[in-house]
Amino acid sequence: MTTVLRATAGTACEEGPSPTADGTGRGPTDAGGARRPQALATALIRAREAACLTQEELAERSGLSVRAIRNLETGHTARPRKQSLRLLATALRLPPAASDTFLRLPRDEGPPAPGGPEPAELPAAPRHRLVGREELIEALRTDLTRNEPAQRPAVVVGPAGAGKTAVVLRAAHGVCDHFPDGQVFVDLHPGSSPPMTADTLVRRVLRSVGCAATGHPEEDRAQLRNTLSKRRVLVVLDNVDSEAQVRPLLVDGGRSAVLVAARRELSALPAQSRRAVGALGQQDAYQLLEDLVGAARARPQRSAALSIVQSCTRLPLALHIAGLWLTARPHRSLRDLADRLVDERHRLDSLVVGDLSLQVSVTAYFRQLPPPVRASLCRLEAIRGDFGVEEMAVHVTPSRRLAVDLLEELTHRQMVYVSTPDRDGGTRYRLHDATRLYVSHLVEQERTRRTATPTGELTPLTGSADTPQLW
Image (tube, rainbow, N blue to C red; front, side):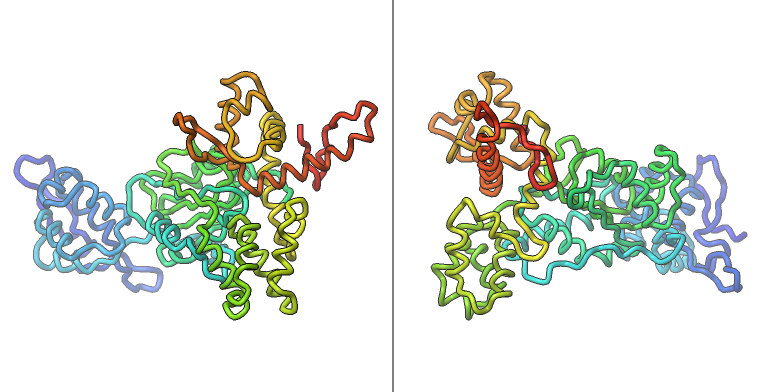
């Protein structure tokens, strides 16, 4: 074996192998006798170890940071600068021929996924323009392609109807080229199904990347971490309800990335890059509706369009449904829909087109509430506008501490948001409009049942698929 690296005086080793087996820049032969190019990451590790240098010592010699060297050795840096490679070659004291070879070595992209082609599971991205979300989408793409030793999951959280899934899909499609080993998409809580457990998710992702589950949860998690650390895979999780569903996918020093659309705050998830999403601004909301129905139709009926925007409370899902409803009915005016949506009692029933429904979206959030939180939310239905701990004491519980805890829980679960502080700086809250309409609808349903009981009191709902249990 040709040796070209010699340790400096005082080190324990005298010599080591060159970055390539034969000094030519070509790796071992494959089954057909053809030479396979050796990866830069592998060559750098071997050359550094042959010189008996730690990453810190090589950093000091070359003038590069330890982090830069670590990223090169783990394959995180996709296009290293030529000048950085020259500094490394000089610090490693490579001869001219070996130095030239080192500069031409390809980057190690990790082992190919076994068991078939790379997964490409992302649903189609939204076809319409996501007005008002451009900066958010660009920020997510930056988060997903940032080279960092510790993986930071990108998390998008917001209330029902805010368009989280559309945002994460648009962001994910924009970075597919950065994840050549595949893109995995999992809906953790589809429809009326129970939420997916963490162990079920692990097995699901393993199958997607071509690995067989062992049947032992701990071994499956270890296998998944090992796989994600060696490949560049993008995992997109939709409708996440807990931190436990995300943790098995997090790997320090790995090349994969995790993008999450969450229904509640994931406060216990470490080092997350959190992005909040909510209602659109007034102008963006109008523009979204105009994009969907066409300017030629919307602008002459601007007052009706603005009324629709107001009734939809500027939520992207509600506006999208309204736009599709109008598109499917070119003979109807915008005023027809605006008048239908004015009546709050029937607004949720009207915001339905095909399999899209704002009410179904809110129901998914409501079903996940613990019974005490659900009951508290229903008792807040009588409050209009902002409220605080004092109103909670009147309508929900006399305990101030419990009232604060319930408000925080409702806020984290995206049913309530923090509003403008009062004159004394006290925190004020407000129900999300879609939540208020939904709860009012449920409570009204319950009131109609009074005549069915001798006392005339409210009775618990049965908890069927269409009418979740209130308390």
